[in-house]
Image 1: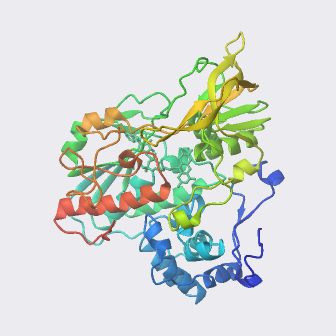
Image 2: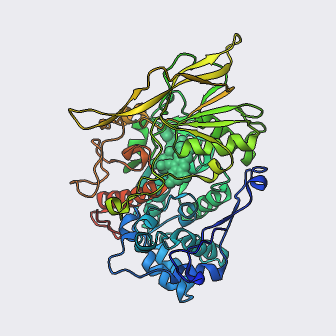
Image 3: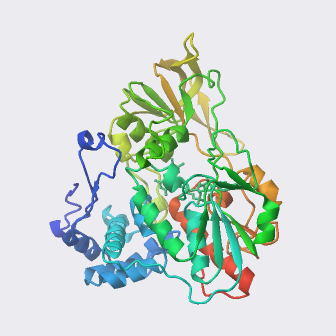
Length: 503
Ligand SMILES: Cc1cc2nc3c(=O)[nH]c(=O)nc-3n(C[C@H](O)[C@H](O)[C@H](O)COP(=O)(O)OP(=O)(O)OC[C@H]3O[C@@H](n4cnc5c(N)ncnc54)[C@H](O)[C@@H]3O)c2cc1C
């Protein structure tokens, strides 16, 4: 557990991060390897809060969580009130306190002054874990029912948050999910070592007790999905039927279409989309599958894409017993030290190393893949790459890349995982509901600064989460789900007691 002396702060007021099992230990399994803080350490973290009059931590958080308030309550030992404070703005703090990059901490004044933000994420986790253990988290079934029926398409964090808010104000909510189990990318994308799935199951059970009906293995509006998008659906509900049966529809179906790598050799045996690896392994860990459909065992691996999805592939491949792992990024390496004067309280660009990358991976910056080289059996044998350098377009000032002449090189690998981001939500679903797309192919719908927040071009059809914004973060999806629920409630009832959000 890191406990460096920070700018002369007395030892008892230093920032403390979650502990981790050693790399050697944790790569032997797929389970959570973090070590939570002790009560005393959490108390000390809470004491580091400056209780700023203008708390940028709160405005930085897409949920507008109130760390200044819950930190004070934890400092004073008022844990139940701290949980009530957190629960007022967040439906699932156990998810964000494990997988959120903690945008709030980048907005923390202690981060600006001391380079060591208050450990808001560790405090959040301590509060919610204690709340579950203490039996404070209970189903909140509505006392009065409105008689209105809402269909939510997709059970990721956006769909779940939206459905929970709507059920709690008395609407009859059905969540449709094309995959076998609910949870979206919480379930079938993010690895178990970052987010154990019993935490997702526990919330689904709570929501069922609140009256939410889950129809899994049921696709809405489309039978076929783009290449690289998984579906377990054994049933299809047409858009027309859903529109007939429900008073409002929320499209929370994510932005699952993966960006492909269009190079020679892409069809080779051993080249996969990232989610083919991640999803398969999560299904093995949960017992849904006996063996992983895709494995990196005994292979040298190239992961194309420098983001979180790529980093998750590193962690899974390492645990499966891969040899050398390369993570390839076209961008240049970010600076070790951020320029806080230019960015604070916004999220700064700086070099970050994930726990998976710590487990052994060579990161290749400014590198583009030209070809996947195959052997005579059509199997991946190497990646042909070139180095890039940054180029500024003199006309627009935009940054781009150009190849460095004669910089070609080969990396011998037997597995390639493409983790180059996600393009758009499923067009077929939008078209089935007659919903207009935005320029990126997601559902066109505005936020609170538009006349009808979260409303699409089709009457009574709303959109939230990645399906509206494009692939983003769990915390943003949850925030959009909550806010969309208020918009739907207003549409159905003409008024709403659900919390109002200001941009
Ligand atoms: C590998 C990976 C790792 C990530 N790690 C992190 C992380 O550590 N931290 C973080 O904050 N964010 C992370 N993200 C991003 C985050 O998971 C997403 O932004 C978030 O899950 C979006 O939530 P959502 O509810 O909008 O969509 P999703 O979670 O994508 O859920 C959409 C659901 O809709 C279902 N669906 C789609 N079409 C239909 C249909 N027609 N009928 C029925 N169901 C349908 C899908 O099966 C899916 O279950 C990660 C993303 C990936 C891919």
